[in-house]
Amino acid sequence: MLLMTSCMDDSVIENNPLDIADSQKGVFIVNEGNFMYSNASLSYYDIQTKTVYNNVFFAVNNLPLGDVAQSMTISDSTGYITIGNSGKIYVININDYSYKGKITGLTSPRYLSVINPSKAYITDLYAKAISVIDPVGLNKMHEIDVNSHSEYYQHSTEQMVLIDNEVFVSCWSYDNKILVIDAISDQLTDSIVVSKQPNSMVVDKYNRLWVLSDGGFEGSSYGQDTASLSCIDAESHELLIELKFDQLEYSPTDLCTNGTKDSLYFILGNWGSTDIQNAGIYKMGIEEYTIPSAPLIQQGDKYFYALKIDPSSSEIYVSDAKDRLQAGTVLRYSGGGNLVDSFETGILPGDFCFK
Image (cartoon, rainbow, N blue to C red; front, side):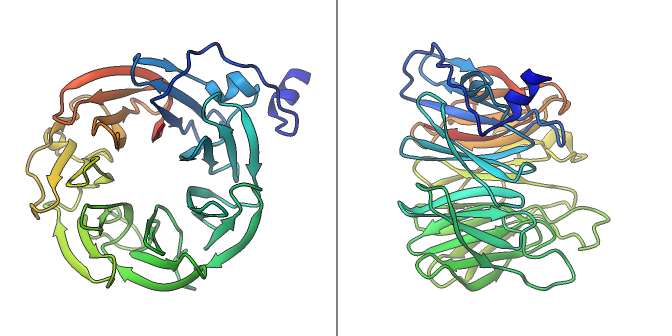
């Protein structure tokens, strides 16, 4: 009992350095773990040596990561790991995985975006507000109210993209908006309507914003749209292109772009599409304006769960969540779709963050 108490108390942190060779280029894998089980974990993969190190946060700090790790952001040598159901963000040194502090006073944090050296935004699933924090002092300064006062629980806030002095924020859960925040005044200035449940966004080489919407799900009280891929002019906020998927049951997720920002990638069918033959990772040029008919990488008997593209090499990283209860696997592919490596991680590998 005493051992368990000491391990759960993040006011008393141990420091147990890991005997790991200095790694200059790698990727952190944020393993969600199971809801209410507090078994989230952090893995690190050395890209050059093809070596994976699991549970690095716990191994160094003798502290469990928490309940449902959502995402990770790196700024210089600092990593910010959002722990949704624990309502906090752990801050680490990305070179030795040691604990540097925590951000609290959050409801259900999703993503953190560093706006400038003295300001960062944190989105939240339930707070109906975006937290504005000092990324150095780790204190919450104020909130940006985004409550729509709708009959649905809007606006939940999800991913963020900073373009010039505006932050575009997707509202995924029971929503169909991209919010626009003035990053200087911290004010909500506009909103853009897209198809239901926009889950991911990227910026292409022309500074256009691409948004992937999964359309919701059958039986939802909010209704269901056909999933879509939208292109928005970041300056005028005008919807330029909207590409609809063929079938209502398709649930595309994890929109990404390559290092040169001229191609889009996403997962199709990972929410149980009946068309298993076409499930997988899709690639589309930003000037094709047509949803591809076949995947670049077939899902097969795997369960593709999360996708990211290495911005320096354009290699593809995708996780296989298996049955969502056992340790997952990450598969590393070349930009052309050839398997380079695979390795085991923690339960539900749900996000990647490149060092």
